[in-house]
Image (cartoon, rainbow, N blue to C red; front, top):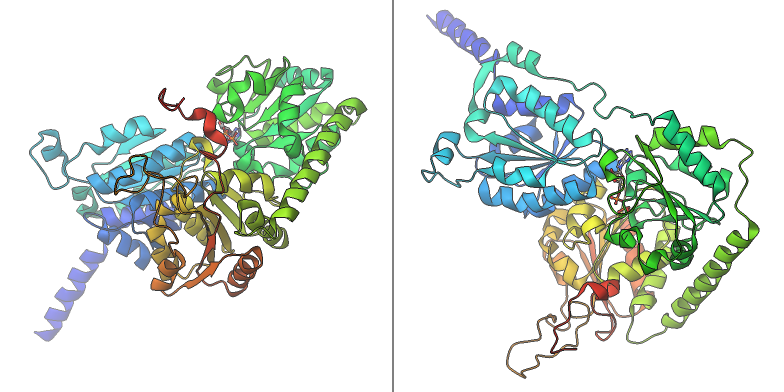
Length: 579
Ligand code: ADP
C-alpha cells in the first residue's frame, strides 16, 4: 500500500512539475530576455510575482513608493539600453508608477511598467472591484505603447512586444497590464516554455539615407562658425567614441546638454560649456546629436540663438525634425550609424573652423572659467556656507572619483552644480531631465548603484529630496553605496520667506528651519553627518565613498542663498499685484 501511495505522490508531483503558471511565465520571459532586475513595490496582486522573481534569481528591489521604483526603472533603462522594469499593484500603485512611466517616455528612456490589475469583467461593467480602474486606458496616453495580456499562453508575446516597443526607435515607457487572474492561470510547462519569445535584435540599427549624410556634411563644410551640440540621446546610444573622433577630427567646438556631460570629459579643450550663451548666439551651423530643440534649448529660436543659423539634426525619430524650427539637414537613423556615416564622409581633409571663431570661443570660455574659479575660491571661506563653497569641494570629489554616478536634483542645487561640477565619463550625470522634475533623486540613486555596482553621490536640494526621501530606508535595507548630500537652506529656493499676513502659518516656500535630514539616515542604520563648512562636507563625502556605507550629509547652506526658481525665473508667471 505504501508503495502505491508513493507512486501516486510521485505521479502527482510529475503532473505538478509539468505545469507552469502566469507568475512563472512572466519571470521566465523577462529572464529569457536578459532582464535581471525588477524595481517595484509588492502587494495585491503581485506579491507572489515579486517573491517568485527573487526565488528564481532575479534581483528585486522593493521601494517605499512606486514613483521612486518607476524612476529607478527609467534610469536603469537609460544606463543599460535594456528596459528597466517597474512592478506595481493595481489602481493607486499603478497611478503612482504612472508618473515615472510618463517621465520615461518624455525622456526617451526605455522602461516597462508592469502593473497587476483587477478583473476585467468587473472593471468593464464598473461593478466596484477591489482597486477597480481601467488602467490600460489611463496608461495609453502616457506611454509609447500599452498592452494587456489575458491568457497565459500570450505572456511571451506580451513581454516581447513590450521590450521591442521600449527599446526600438526612440526609446520610451511601455505599460503592460497583467490582471490578477492571468498570473494564477496554469498551462503545460512545455507549451509555456515554447510560447516564450527571445527577442532578436530588439533595437535594430537604423542606417541613415546616404543623401541625407551628404547634405549634412556639405552644410557642415560650408560653416564658418560651426557647433556640435550633444544630448542625452547620444549618451543613451553609447556613441561617445565616434562623437569624440568627429569632434577632434573636425576641430568644431561642442556643447553637451546636461545628461550628455562627460560623454567627452568636460575638461576637453573643445568644450564650449563655459561659453554656452556665446556659441548658441553666434554659431552659423549647429549639428544636433540626440538633443531636441525643446524648452531646454529655447526651441531653437529667439534671443538665445541670436544670429541666423542652419541646423543639422541627427535623431532616430523622423517626426522630431522641424518640430520647432526648420531643420536644413535632417539625418534620420540611430546615432551610432549616423555619426559614423558622417565621419566617413568628413574625410581627413576637413577644413577646421577658422581661428577667429575658435579664438573667440576660447576667449569667452577662459574668461568665464576664470570667473568661476574666482567665485569658488572666494566661497570656500564664506560663512555661513553658500552653494559655491559647498560645490567647490564636490567638484574636487567628482574629479577624484570620475566613475561614480552623480545624481542631481533641485532648483539652485541643480543649476549651480551643473555649471560647477565637471563630468569625466559618459552616463554618470543623472538629473532632472526633460521635465526638469524633482523627485527622481532616490530612485535614480538606487538604480545607479544597482546597475553600475559603483558608488553614487546624490546631490539634492532640501525640497527635491523631500519627494523621495523615504527611500533612505531602501538604500539602507539593500546596503547600497549611496552618499546623499542635501543642500539644506530651509526651504524651496530659499528659507527666508515670511507669511505676508503675519499669521501663524509659515511662508509657503519654507521648511522647518535647521532640520536634521541626517537623522533620517541614522534612523535606518546608515551614517548621518551634519556639516556647516566646505572642509567638513568634503571629509564626510570622502569617508562615505571610502566606506561604501549608506550616508546622508546634511549640508547647512545659508538660508538666504539661492534665487527664485533657480535659473527658471522667467517661467514663473508673476501676479500683477506683485509687479
Ligand atoms: P537632451 O535633453 O539632452 O537635449 P533629449 O532628450 O531632448 O536630449 O533628446 C534626445 C533625443 O535623442 C530624442 O529626440 C531621441 O529621439 C533621440 N535618440 C535617443 N536614442 C537615440 C538613438 N539610439 N539614435 C538616435 N537618436 C536617439
